[in-house]
Image (cartoon, rainbow, N blue to C red; front, side):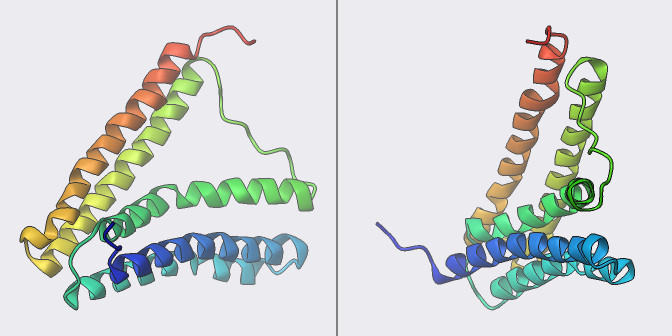
Length: 188
């Protein structure tokens, strides 16, 4: 069994570190806001969330520029950034609502609709974010290809166009279409 290239291992670790960093920065910002009552400092910390994405993107581009062969991990880094840009704001709002409820006597978080046209619209909104995330991913892939140029060594990056399109189609059928088919079921 061939070993994973060292560059790929490092990129996977960096992607995981970025995800962990996102949640740790968010948690620290929420603790500052709700438990320590330092709202201005909390906002400053939240502005640091995009920095993890920028660092990951910079490392990915520099790794490719230094001569690393493009791997699945390089494309995954672009996809991670695309999805954090498209869904990061929702994740922050979700965490803020739950933290406020549990630690600051805030109102219960609003639950997403589960029936009728409201549920279908909600799922289409999520799917739209998925489309946005995939478009960002493909734009980043194209930018990375500009760094590398096209060759056989870039095939792993080019494959991400198919992965992104597959994600859009999969999400469409198991999000909006599924909800459209089941949103009028009787509550069990």
